[in-house]
Length: 248
Image (tube, rainbow, N blue to C red; front, side, top):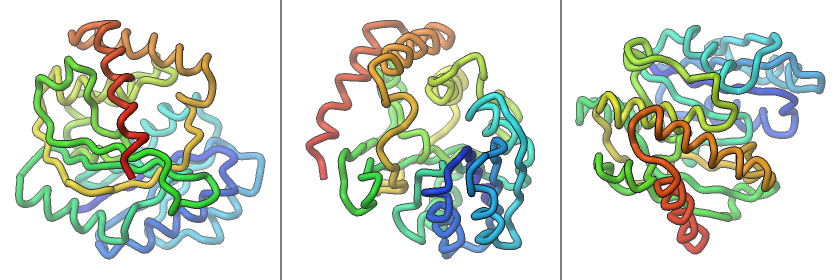
């Protein structure tokens, strides 16, 4: 089973090297790393070229945002499984892809997911928030549950069959995709009960009150589009995040 790890970058000179090293350090060997750079104006591209290995595919050109870049990565992927590792993120351990491959094989599943830690921008060992997913049940979707998107590893055939990210969403295309795959089309999913990804704080959806409100509006749009409710579900979704701040 081949894994295609897709990293979208734009002016990510401070963190992209860590992401590249995290991929290169994985014990599982059948990996390709696809880096989609949005024509960065800083040192991102030179850092990518200096640190990438032979199994890395680099595309640097203007895009229409992160979801457009991720779609471009999926279209260029030749692996059986699609993984997203954002430029600010790292794998929690060097055995994550190996464990993912084992779980895919054991469960014969369309997708897997796990837990995620939000960590300090300057110290990835300092945990700010712990997103523990728990087992998936269909009923949880109507209560606002979702797996952390960076931990959601999905077979490419699912994207081929049910579509890529909807770029009409500026912030919530990942939520829309999860609702579409797990809810509307009911693909199978298996839970890996451990931290798979460490994400530095400061993501696009939470960096301002304006973005948080925009994200909530787009969440409602995604829910209605996929037949899973509206504002009450969004409130439950956001309320469920509070306990994550107290888990370490």
